[in-house]
Amino acid sequence: MIIAERKPLDEIKEMVKDYRKVLNVGCGGCTSICLAGGQKEVMILNRDLKEQLLGEGYSPVLDGFVIERQCNYDFFDELDNMVGGYDAVLSMACGVGVQFMAERYPETPVFPALNTVFCGADRNIGWFEENCRTCGECVLAETGGICPVTRCAKGLFNGPCGGTRLDGTCEVDKDTPCAWYEIYHRLQAQGRLGNILTVKPPRQWQNQTRRSLVQEDYKQRYAG
Amino acid sequence: MPDVEKNTVDTAAIATMLQSKDAEMKRILNYCVRCGICAESCFLYMAHKGDPQYMPSYKVINSLGILYKKKGNVDKSFFEGIKGLVWRNCVLCHRCYCPIGIDIPRMIDFTRSICRSQGVYPDHDGGESWL
Image (tube, rainbow over all chains, first blue to last red; front, side, top):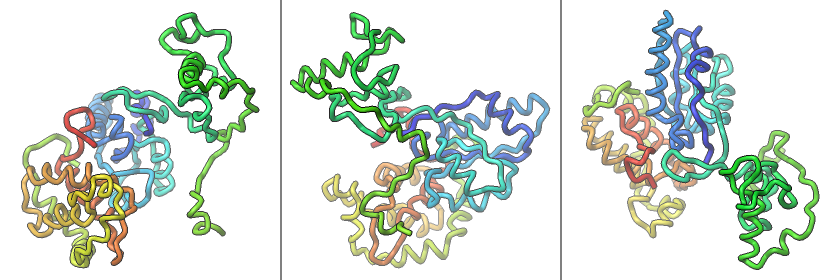
C-alpha cells in the first residue's frame, strides 16, 4: 500500500490561500487506509484550514468530497460535474492521484495536501513500515525475503559495509537492524548461505525513468 | 459531504443523488436477470467459498436496489447495515463479469458516494473490523 502523510498546514495554506473556492478531494484508497487522506481527514483538514485562513483575514469557501480512488478515471464521474465550480482543487491522494487529477482537469490548479512517503506494510493501526522501493529488479528470492535496497541504509547489494555493530544494528541508527546481518542469519538458518556468496552485477536502477507496465496477456490489446 | 457526524440522514439529498442517475441506474438494475454468472468472476466470492453476500449482483441489489425501491427513504441504520456489503465485500477491482454488460463496480461506487454523503464510511483507525 502507498503510505502518505499530511503536509504541514502552513504549506497547504500557502498553496490555496489566494483561491476563494477550493474543493478538497479525499481518496478512498490507500490514503484512507493509512489515515492520511480519507473522509475523516478531509473534514479535519478543512476545519483546520478554514480556521487558519479566517484568522488571517481570508474568506474561503472550502468544500470536501471523496472519490473511491484518484488513480483510476472510472471513479471520477461525480467529480467531473463539480470541479468546474471551484477555483482550485486540493487532493488528499498520493502523488499518483494528484497527477491524475491534474491531468483530468488541466484548467484547474490542483494542489497536493499530502506527501507520498513510501510503499509499505501495516505494522499496526497508524504504524507503517517501508519494505519495498519498487526498484523493478526484485532480489528477495536470494536474500531470504529481506530487501537490501530498502532496508540497508546504504542500499548495498553485495553484503554489509563495515558499519554493522556487534549487536547487529546499523551504524547509521542504533534502532535500525543491519539488513545484511539479518539476511545472513536468515539464510544461514535456512541453509542457503550460498545465495550470497557470488558477487551480483551492478543494478540497472530502472526507477530512474518513468515506468509503465502492461501485463503479458494484455500486450496485444494495447499494441499500436 | 457533511462537515460533521450526524445520526440522521438527509433523505432529500439522497433522493436528489438517486434522481441524478435515475435512468441509468434503474435501467441496469432492471437488466439484471439474477443469472449469477458474475459470482465466479469475483475473487472475494470464490475466496469466501461461495458466500452469497460476496456475489456482485447481491451486493448491488441489496444496497442500491433497496435505496431505489424505497426512493431514498431510509434511516442511518440502513447505511450502517450496507457498509460491509459495499466496502468490505467489494474492493472495486472492476474484474466482475456480467454477460449483459452491467457495470457493477460503477453502481457500488455510486452507492458508496451516497453513503459518504450521509457520513457513513469505513473507519480505518481500529474502530471496526475492516477486512
